[in-house]
Image 1 (cartoon, helix red, strand yellow):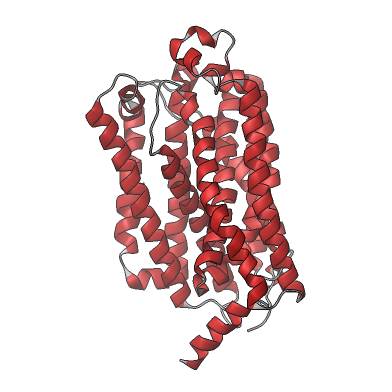
Image 2 (image 1 turned 120 degrees about the vertical axis):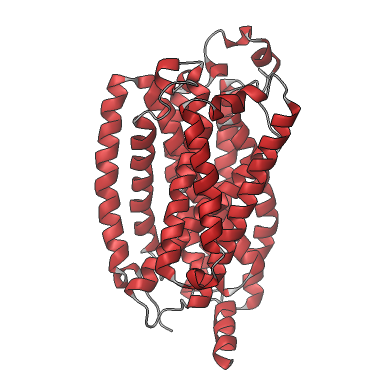
Length: 404
């Protein structure tokens, strides 16, 4: 075993270059779109911001899960989790246009919105001042967790914290941190997605969101690890068993996402309440219905069927293709959740029940922001070795494997 860096993995360099090109082109197209339709620009920016947030928070959640559970699967993925979490300050910057465009995005932020009885009843929570304060609180907490875990990891790399006693602090922070991450993401999902239609609510939506974030972070991690395995198979810590573990975890997240999604749909559809059912009706009729079918097949049945194969999960290249597909479905799922909510604000641009659902900026801007995130991610990944070689648990785990 020896220390590897991104310089030893040409595929990561190529990924960074392509991400920069795609990001610049897509964001330039978004800038042109802003001149053409500023309302749609802000709404599409929200989708891109949320997808980048899911990558960073998914990485942070998996990082804390790894510290709590141990295991080689998390050890080989820790650097990716850490690098993804360190982009939270960049994601916070991406939140600024969302705050600026509040009246163009959220129905409750439109002047005179309190004339709506539902919005009036929720105005103590749904108001600009409290919304901005909550955004600040969320990111302060998330970046505090990120800072502590990454700082201690850097100390471990430097050789100033090598004992298992020193490593306990990772778990001490991760246990309550993961719990409060779920709570804050639940509130954030209400603020940024559910409040787009103040009449609609779902008690399971927060948990569904955090599972989706975990799935997004896990799929991205598999793609990066597969690139490392392909370019530097000898001397790396990666083995088919690691990819098999990641594949099993990916399958578990896909199944959990499907279970929660279907549970939410079944409960709301069976309840048939006028304040809840229109949300689903808008998303399963007309052109949006085709995307709903795509999600059922592409987000669950296809990856579920493929991931049942143990042999496939051990093949890094094939597993990476499935992970890439899941990452695409995560973006489609986010668009399906967010974009139809704007039908009341701008029916001609948001895709009503019978209209074209996919405005081109709903694709261009999220792709541009994600490409920018990937470019910065590779830079962050390059600041440290690709594996935590000084972690005492890693040395013990691989020494145990070599003995068998």
